[in-house]
Image (tube, rainbow, N blue to C red; front, side, top):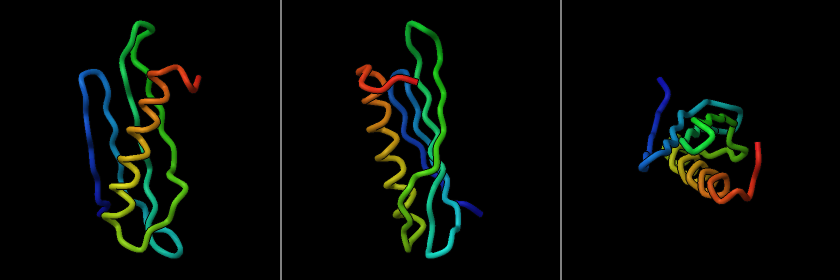
Length: 78
């Protein structure tokens, strides 16, 4: 069973779930936000590997929130 986490804001959501890999755990990050152009969704695998499952979930949530901030500020475009 995977460990999961989720944080939400007014019009955005970041969720993660852990994945066992060689050397520990990594996580899949799912981000979504609304805007004038409609709802945007993206998912990616976090590049870091952690020894403990809870560490990967927390770091994945942190990475997803940073990603949302960059996307909403039009710093990155997809």
